[in-house]
Image 1 (cartoon, rainbow, N blue to C red):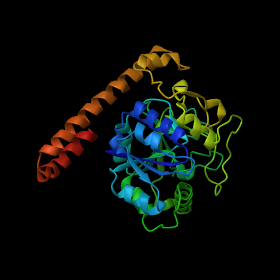
Image 2: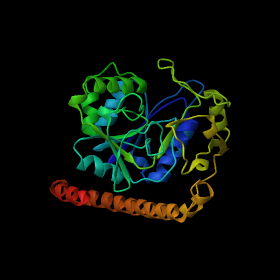
Image 3: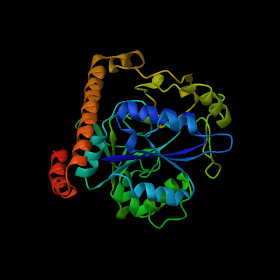
Image 4: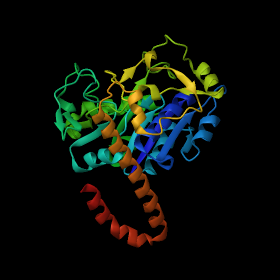
Length: 334
């Protein structure tokens, strides 16, 4: 199974888009999502917490200790996310888990990268579905692709996360968590798994319309009014980010600007049927619709299996459950 850990600071409106789009496109249940958040006197999280009440909400007290505690309680695979990300296409987390399980030389699985993203290096295309590349032998001309550790949209084994996190008390915020470990990994490349993977097409993007920290002065597009207080006021008055508009977006960079920013009524809902996606997509051909129908069916089947699994797990003795784990793992790999 997979857990989600999302970092958020003073951006409940953008966090809402992350959570809503993630659940819509992946079928991940709220119970498997953790949000480590920071609010301020002017920006509170009560509204978004009420919207997603089954998520595990952790108000930050000590970033390092809070994160370590969440990781220790997580499932065997962890998807990291940030509140400035939203998803744009369907995906099956079981595909990601399967790749990480079968390939011992795979360090992580990126949901932000894909064939259309800029600076594409030489990659292998597996089963016309996945990209596979050696991040250790990619030069700096191929930025993003030689960056093995990110907390915006990548999946790692829990064991991998704990190796780099344990004992690193200087990690006091998400930016340091990402930059410290990325720097450590790049300095000792030979000690780490050399491959990265992604779907053939990227599944999410990073919306750079504001900034919540000054330690790492990342650029952002301020051409539209999108400061933190303004967005919080809009959220409290009944608005949210219009991520529906960008279904199947053909963005060429993992970071996008204000052209991807617009607001809609908070009561608006995503398309109920994947068939309606063709109204938003640039690619309106029938094969795209068929692909998403298949993925959507897989999501519904997966939700049903998880539901049955939880019932069985509550009924059967723990010793019996432990004895069945090797068999279940074998079936999953098949």
